Length: 245
Image 1 (tube, rainbow, N blue to C red):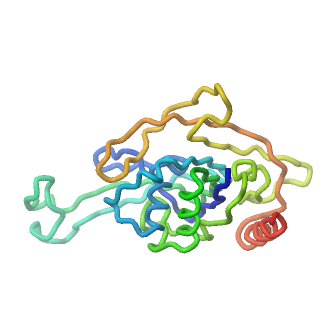
Image 2 (tube, rainbow, N blue to C red):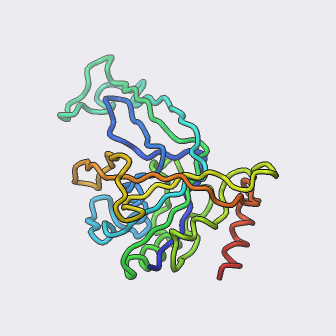
Image 3 (tube, helix red, strand yellow):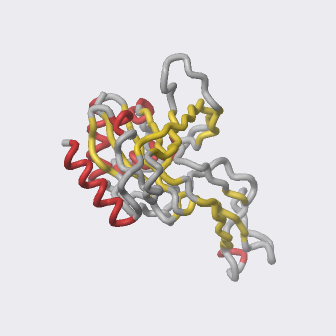
């Protein structure tokens, strides 16, 4: 099945789980809802646009770098009079002395993920065109998280298998280490009869409720890449894609 190879890398990424009061956590990897939202935004769809076609897409995530969890301290409405501050849930102004809201928002710093996106041929074609020519500027979970490399890599006849050969976006290993352990996340069973490792409470599309989705996690050894970070990685990636055509 023809699909898409894509890459997510940025100084910060955030793939929200359900907020608890003023604490906004993040998953350690992109969620299905975030990836569908990313593609829908690239297509120019508004946040309330129904996207039943994108629900047929499947995602396999290779964790090149898991990154580190960091928390950003936010204040909203500080120093403003109550009538200009963030309103209450029922819409009225806040009382004097309570107009400043404090939140903590979690991010994954320095993470990198390579994706295989599969699905119906027409949906894949539209998604590939959109990711290569996005209508709205892409961001990885929050608007403050723009990608630092292009998201769209190429279309491929078997993108899931290609994840075993595409250069890793991580430092090159020691000379004697010929293979590296790499984590893969699947949103559908990677082989018949495989039992899910856990359920992920996924971020919903607008107007929908949170849903629990089965997730399969596998660790595999793949050949050590010659690529390092930054320009070295992009050069190795470009060379690989050109030679693979």
